[in-house]
Image (cartoon, rainbow, N blue to C red; front, side, top):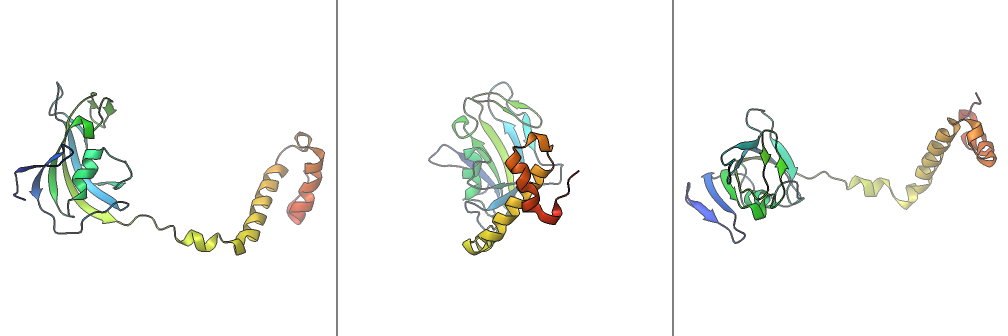
Length: 183
């Protein structure tokens, strides 16, 4: 790819490589960190910035492939490497379509094409939830059930006794034992 020349994809997305990154390629389910400036590229507001991270010092981080940004942005990022800078020309069919969007700086009218100058600054693994399957097992179900029951009965004990069915009110001291104190 030649720097500065526009490339097109089958979907209609166009992009221009400003700097080719030398880092990793993002894949779906990774969190990507980007610095960007997003502009309206058509209509009477053409050229107006509607959102940016520039100047804030903080990149925008989102999970690639989860629909957190418009489809054209996800497609444009998916072939970038960390450290790369690119300008994306996104047709409205890959942007907000017939809907409007309220950005930090400007409203995007329905049917607007977008231009996003983006830099891929980092990749982060998705949150690892594998530990959950080791904690919440059938062998551990008993202690977790006990904790849930105690929590429910502590909540019931905080209620006025007259608001509870009599059989529940009688169960509270039996379940909570020494934790229960009548007021």
